[in-house]
Amino acid sequence: MTTTDFNACLKDMQAHTLDVLTAKTTEYATDDRLHNFKAAAALQRETPVKALGGMMVKHTVSVYDLIHDCEAGAEIPRDLWAEKITDSINYLYLLWALLNEKDNA
Image (cartoon, rainbow, N blue to C red):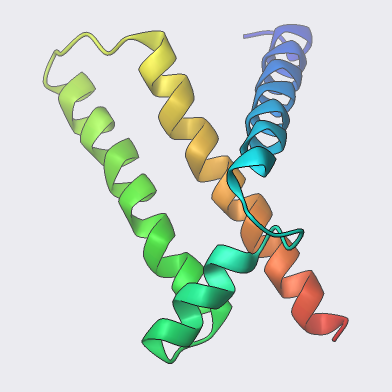
């Protein structure tokens, strides 16, 4: 893959992940985009960062399952790859936001 193609690929994925993350805004009842992680943390008596990590595990497992299936010869639809990779990237964005909020508190 050429550098030009690689950069275009990354640009497309970045745009898609931000579109999905922005669209998810309507699913949250509060103005706090990190509310679910804070609420989960309170319920489990842990930090929001640890709560996010626990939730992120299911997305990581999904990616690994797809990798194993692909390596075993399964045809994985591109849109399924995009969904799982996007979820993983967005959880890292959300982790970054939690860490920034924690640092600025």
